[in-house]
Length: 210
Ligand SMILES: [Fe+2]
Ligand SMILES: [Fe+2]
Image (cartoon, rainbow, N blue to C red; front, side, top):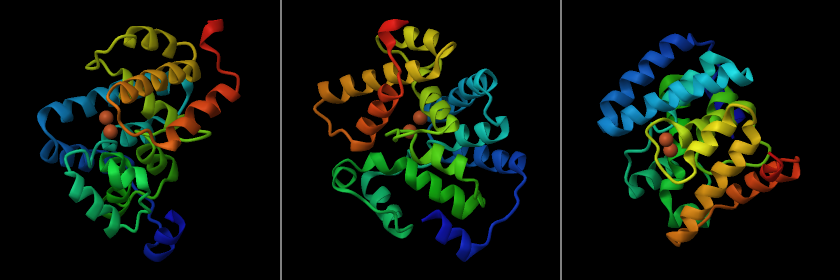
């Protein structure tokens, strides 16, 4: 899908520092103060993880600041935006449209901010559900979103500790805690989240050996 969009529009070489500034300005205007602070915290956490694990810091900053760009949209608005951008909406997303806020944010980043870097766009797209075989940047944004300093939930300290030495095992714990929450609340679970967790476990992640 991204390939078709880039062919149609042409790929621009962007100054990511300028893109970051534009995005930060946009989210300070569009998101609530609480969500704006969450985005800044995710950026701080993501940069720390980037230094530890070696992702590109500029891309990490851009993906982190933009990840919740579409978080203020209502369910109806998310569906409309997804249709506008020809995003395929599955049954789970139709019934739980907030799951679309990552994909919609990535399309806004491409459409309005000129981002064509697939590492950035994928990390934004999959920050809520995860996906099979996540890239390093996908993992960093997913994890930073869960463990930034404003998050308080049982087990978060343990995940923060493990994140310093083993990103995959930290992700398994983060995913487990999301699944526990979703199950408790009787929410739908997107298949990508199950695939994400299984792919980490199949690659040998084992929290019980730590
Ligand atoms: Fe989000
Ligand atoms: Fe977030």
